Length: 331
Image (cartoon, rainbow, N blue to C red; front, side, top):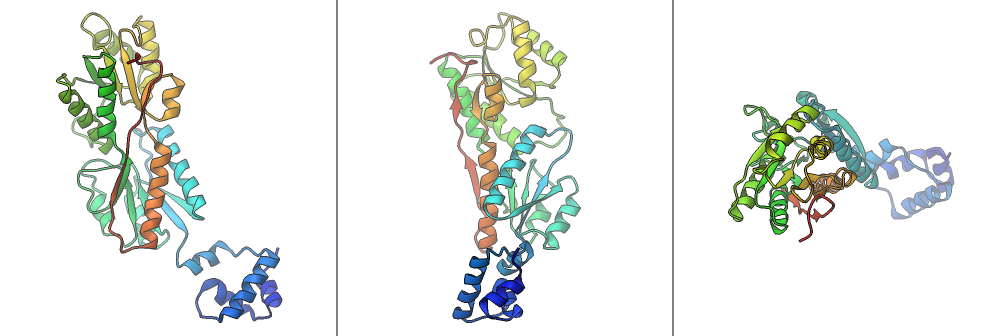
């Protein structure tokens, strides 16, 4: 493996001149730089990451605050992390994961210049982290869409439009009693931004069609879901369609409906707001949750702000797509 000394010997320059060429700390002549670059190409020299970072004036590290509390869906979180890692790798950057729950440590990592930018996941309305994040002197991108983002860049799936689309598609297939199924939440606890926007979109979609907008909440436990099916999803007064924004409940719900003899999609139609792989596994019609695209967009936005710190932060919402499968009827 070639070293800087080998490059200096091959190019006929001093070791310090090679160092200056790699780090950019001093100006060198064009002809000298060309000789060094030619030597690097001939010897297939790969400078250390620290030298590349020094040359770019960057750490080439992207910080990602990853939530680990019990309410998060590990499948979703790891899909986000995977997409961020892939996008960062393509940009010749690495990723530093920090625990989102340790906000003080997250801030310290950024303030000490250990990362070029920070991506923050799992946003809630009135998120107490936002004021401190807004004061950081490094770019921050939020995966989430709070009502007040404190001037920080945001990216997310358009849950509002997605829920409205689900209602419209069910209505076009004859549904008239549509309910939204979500996880049970503490009414006094924090509200995830995606939950607020999906709920609002469901209400708007139903109102647009002159329909009531009932909501059902349930824990992702077989017994609780079986009870919900018996009370709300079977019998003459049952709802005739569900928008399911509750990924963990889907497998249990499918089994409970089958056990109760509920004809899907004849008596009950179902549209899940879920990642494509999850919905496809149960042949559920879905509003696709494009997690890989969200993660990649977050990285792109963060690196754009690193390259141009003067650029104003902005927000991006990814548009929804309906994917018909076996839990909805034909139009």
